[in-house]
Length: 114
Image 1 (tube, one colour):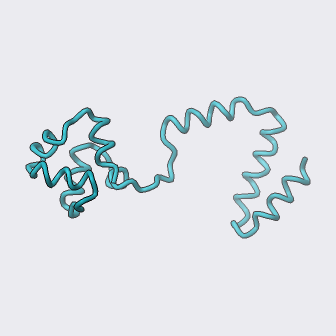
Image 2 (image 1 turned 180 degrees about the vertical axis):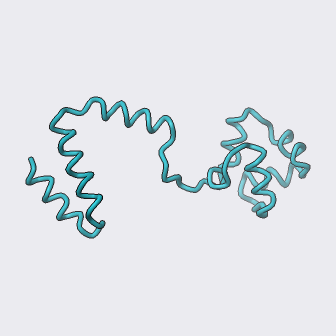
Image 3 (image 1 turned 120 degrees about the vertical axis):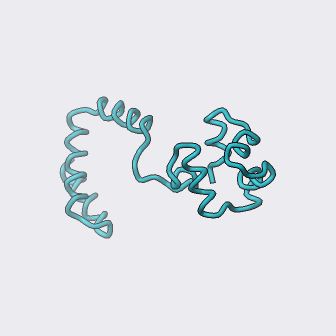
């Protein structure tokens, strides 16, 4: 759970969060340290309180890139040569029509284009 990280990002103290959520600060500390697990109602309250999704709160791996990751990726894409863009396009098209089990075939297609 990313509870401590999120709380610190918001600039809050444990006792403030516990007070606002009307729970004991020792209980809240247990959630942050992993000594106890909040029930689903508390998880929902925490997510609402911190204005994050439950996935973010629980540390689920997001399939969507963050804004900083998108910016970094765009910066790298803008530096690609025309030949690299062509290879990337071929690879993307191959991925759209192939399954993961066919990655060796995809790599052969890319090598043949070089």
